[in-house]
Length: 218
Image 1 (cartoon, rainbow, N blue to C red):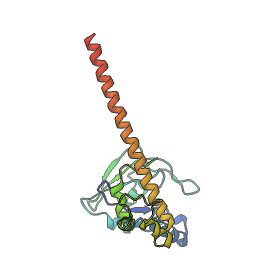
Image 2: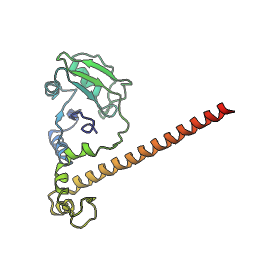
Image 3: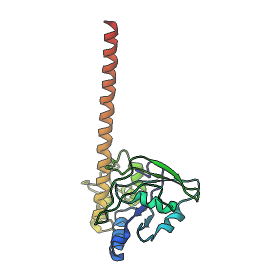
Image 4: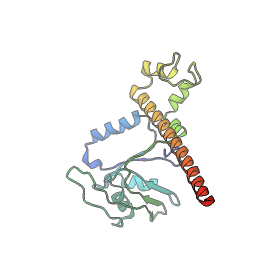
C-alpha cells in the first residue's frame, strides 16, 4: 500500500532489547522470505541501539510517517530522534507491550530538517487496489507469470503455469507464494467491497435527490 501510494517504505523493528540476537536474526530472515525487500532498521528505545542508524536515513526536507499498531513505540522513538520528551508516552507493561497514547497526527521538524509525522495507532489496514504496489515486492512471480501458458493465468490450478512449477521445484517457497495469493485476494475483495459501497452511495444519493424533488413539487 505504501509503494502503491508513491511513498518509499521502511520497516522499523522496535523493542529489540526484548529478544536475543539469534531471535532477531530469525525474524529478519522471515521478513525477507516473505518477499519484502524494503529497508529494515532494528531499534531499541531502551538501549538506543539503531537510533543513530535511523537518524541517518531521515533526510532534510523529506517527510516521514510513523505508522503502526498502538504501543509499538512510535512516539517514544520520535522523542529519541528529537532528543527530548515532546510527545506524551505511557509506561510499558511487564511484557514490553506499550499502551495507546497518541490520539492525533502531529508534524514535527527535527534538527536535521527532516519532517516526521506521528500517527495514532492503526487497528486495521485494508489493502485496496494495490496490484501496482505488490509487483515490486513480488517481481520474481511477475517475471515467471510471463511464461505461463495462459495470459490470464491465476497461478492456482491452470496447466502450464510457470509460477506453480517454480513452487513445485522449490525455486519459490510455498509460504511466499501463499502470501502473494493472500494479498492479491484481499486486494480484490476490498476493491469489490469499495465498488459496492460506491454503488450504494450513488443510489442513496439519487433517492435523496428524488425525494427532495417530490417534496418540492408537493
